[in-house]
Image (cartoon, rainbow, N blue to C red; front, side):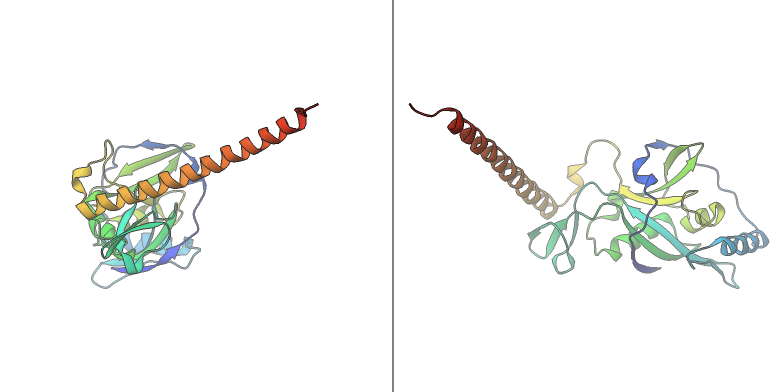
Length: 231
């Protein structure tokens, strides 16, 4: 599976709309002729040159774009890290930029699990792939729907059936758990990195508050100095 450089463009309506869980739609198997016709129709509608290719063995290849919506920091090799981070030995935990988009070149045989592993490899992420899940997101009747995909589903097939328009279908990578955070799933270095990041953020917020109240105090003292003048 090939990985291309991240793309920064994204329909902003996706991040503003409220997601609604949607039941998984049944898989419809396509004949070779139906696949060929759909690929021809797909390629005729493509506007970004990311077309699909049908091979003689019936396997087709193409591109999908995946938006990264991760709430917690990810663990990477420190030499590859960027942005706000905290170090622990040879690993670094940092927050991935919000709305980061990545484009992958995959085949029709690649599963959701393989796509997740490719995304993590692209960003040099050391975290266990089992901590993440791939979702599909679509618009229907002025509503934004999301559905978590099973590990055995094939994203390129979903892309082909939906067509190239991202408002019809897009993919999102999120943390796997939907309820309480399963801290026991993280390694000791990861938890230590999280604590360092929390300490750093707490100190930053304290400094901001101290500066804010110091500014208020200066203004109050200045006002009092102007009103109170000894006779």
